[in-house]
Length: 281
Image (cartoon, rainbow, N blue to C red; front, side, top):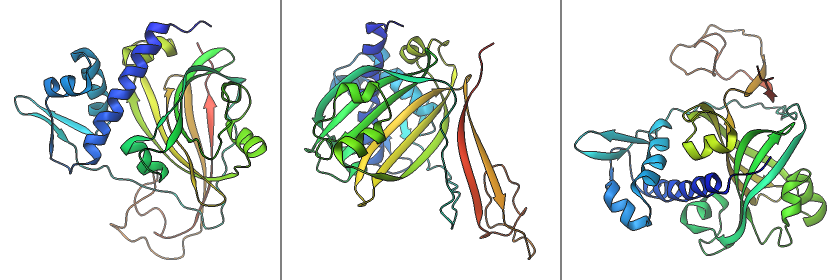
């Protein structure tokens, strides 16, 4: 598969604009205004369509709100529900198919304000920025944006990012043993540039993954966000719920997909998660 350089360039430019707007959002509170499109275009040096594509994505993701005649505002925070096991039973088996990678960009750059907060380093600290297209059996499946601390893997190569498992390379070649990750998943849609790379129609449904990975020494190693095709990729979770001895406690929250009160709040939940690549029609 040949990668369209125009589509790749447009996607990467939109990604940089998105990160800049996210920095503005994270520095504000819900309900605060962000600069106008004209001001942002001037500040970031991009065209109105490029800026609008990034803003549209953040609106769909529920991070910005547009109000006609008033401007753009930081949205209220989302409700987050976390599943926790007290027996470390979380596992993440590999998804099916043969996975390969095609690099779209691989560069060394300063972490910047937003990524430095994620990785707990100085904004001037060097990181590896990686954009890559992930394919399953030769079919585009995901676009990944990785930010890896350069001081932890100074000899990281493009070959390691295209072949094999990155975490295995970090362990075997760089002595970095990752052991924990916090990951969120949200629904979204793809932009035109992303659609071209993934070979799907514009505004097709997708899954947005955000992940922070740490090693056995508690150091943040990698911050990543990835866009997976919603028509070909799904997440399956297996939950084992503890037996209920007491009556439910209304109003104490609930686990995703399980009606409130179906089991006592605080009962242990053992679960495993796997990605499933669906066959095309």
